[in-house]
Length: 91
Image (cartoon, rainbow, N blue to C red; front, top):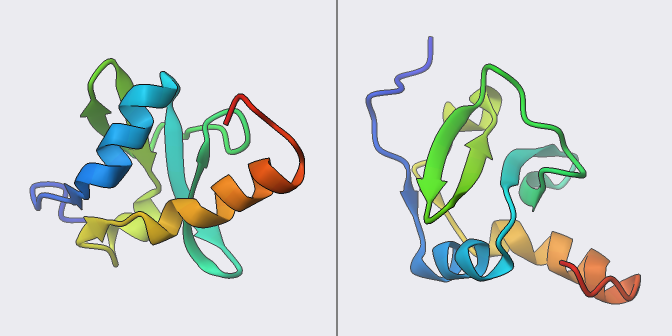
């Protein structure tokens, strides 16, 4: 059972990125560990924990919610590198 009463902290850098991007994101499980990707790439699930960040939402997978205490910028770096390699400006 997930303790949804426990607060999951979000680093300021991640909050700033999400606010500035004006998009929703999802913290999901990858073979490399927890990763934040655009909600367009990993569709949010009803079971996700929803963290409001400005006008946007960071959806946290219930699987990851069991293990994390803080959402960190390193969880976003893989996505940013993917965008850069593929010339995607909308990231």
